[in-house]
Image (cartoon, rainbow, N blue to C red; front, side):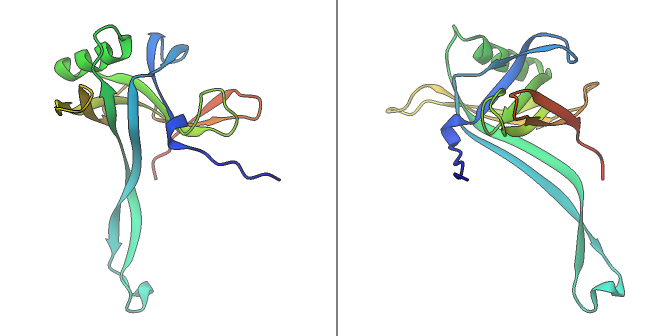
Amino acid sequence: MAKKIRYGWKAKGYYRSAGTFESPTMTEISVIGNLKVSPKYSGQTIPTREGKGMQLDEPTFLGIEVSGFIRDDENDAAFLAFDAAFHAKTELDMAFLNGGITEAGSRGYRLGMKLHEWEQQQDNEGVLGYQFVLKPCISDNVKQRAVVSAEGVVAYSELAAA
């Protein structure tokens, strides 16, 4: 079987541009790049003798941070949604996958997130845009893992608490 290699430039970010959480219109964000999706558990040290002299640690809370660059474009609906969400501290319904939302085998997360950083890049030789950081927020919507089936249908499953 041929090995499938995934490239970072093919990773996708989506936001809910219309619809409801249950029946969303997820729109690809074409003006983003250099995405970094960082799921990381915090840990809890277990002070028992089970380690026989070795410190034991168990994962507890899952934190997910998404960072990247978005090009400044006042004609792009996704850029305007990010800008408005940062300044109003409102939730964005986001999905980040390592491929397209209909590409078999793609996987990632769908979360209600808020922007925590919105740093404008004004380098002399660079393209005007913003470095951003998104983190999950308090939300009525379920935090989800996303996996695209062989038929190209995305399936969401709840990220269960440990």
